[in-house]
Image 1 (spheres, rainbow, N blue to C red):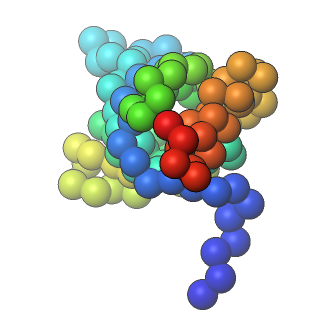
Image 2 (image 1 turned 180 degrees about the horizontal axis):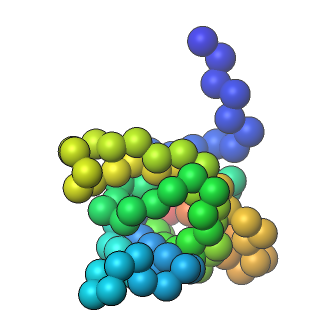
Length: 119
């Protein structure tokens, strides 16, 4: 089976704060969820999260890249969601929307910088 992805993905866990852009889901529930990446690319990210995400919604992400220790912010659209552990933990695919140049460079350096023996 051929992989149809456009971008190189690296499988790794990075810390992510997911901020719902629609305000509180229910009064008293947080709008920021601390999550982990499952993989990441220049085009988007796959998350493991407790956030109640719906396909088509937009979120703000604050991502800390583990290996390079760089941090960047991005807006992303939720493309798909599936339950991992009942209704408590989900896996979601998100597509970045217009990364700013600094964030794009940090991500490129993180993805491609560790190759050929460089750190």
